[in-house]
Image (cartoon, rainbow over all chains, first blue to last red; front, side, top):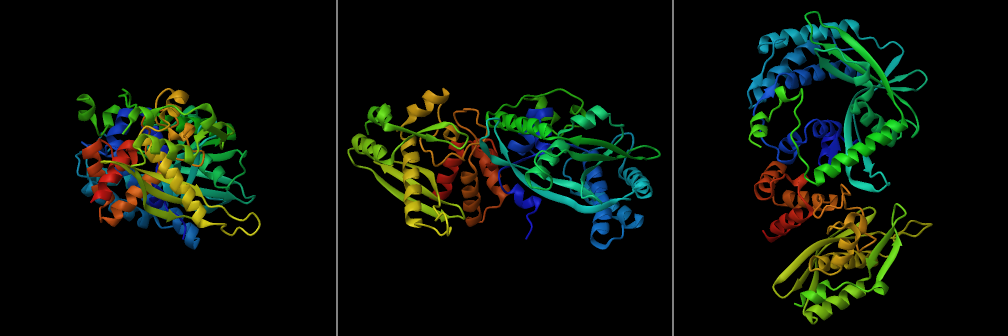
Length: 274
Length: 205
């Protein structure tokens, strides 16, 4: 039986999103992961993004399993069901924003985004190699000592071209356009590249092609691709960052960091009273 | 108990060295030196028992308990399983278990203060068996390698905690709630000392 992400999560681990959280605001990391405090509030972006993610996953999984993509109706219904369930299950109040002021408008926005996805997605020249691929890999200190904690992650979509070269795809929803600098610096793709290299999908020194597929939350949604790549040097640097983050966590180094994420933070009250 | 004697630094000829995984020299104390120290400090009034043992694919793991008077300290010990180079057959599981037991004894003795100077002199803090342990066979337990006095729990402690919780029909959520209540962190983020305390508590019930 193939391991799944749930099994990996049973062991001591760190994920890209944990590293991102720690680097963005280590105090939030403490509240969310170390103490697992209940969330005070939640941004719509989280259940919304998850529901879109589920719908797109169904689309690609259908191609991988049967060779036929899922219909727009199917993924739209799945999105609505996922979002409704996600909103119902969330015990904390939801923060709605201008682009979707209530659940109804969020559903309409999501459906129009999925329509843009369905009309624009193009897999010509690519084979779907894996969908939601769970991977784990050991981490090392800069002097090569193996740590007790694994890096884990699930790659949204792994495509393979006719020459056997992989393309890592991560699906995102965003109102803003991404800059190439942000795409090139994003640790998530480096983490995936590290996982692929460590698990033998690519050669250890190989450059890994990556792409962010971004569904824009606009009145007329667009489906945009942002290409980047990751080398062995990127992976080496990422491993150092992961190791340093683990050292910070082990040292109980948790400091509030003011930034653009604060307005959507689930722990504003706890932070203010820290 | 003669604490001064327990914590008395070992002499240079008692401290052995071997090469670690990343090419660094690892200091360690041999089992008989630790036993001699316990005999001297407790006037032989101590006992050691194996609470449990597990045999994995590549290593054996034991939990040992060292008791002296009213005090008891528990710790993990492990040893890689020795296999025949050609046939890959296990050479002697009993010997591997004995090595793991010695490892656990040495770790328990450390909790009484035996060999503590080796940690302090190397990293300026205290307990960090990750990189400077007195046992070269057990170096895979560390996490952040920051020389912290009380680093994050090891994967062995974590696995054992999960096993104990499972045996006691505790969900992960319930275990985490207990850990947060007592130590301010969920199970995955306990310190080594707090994880050891939690394990002792669970073993006691």
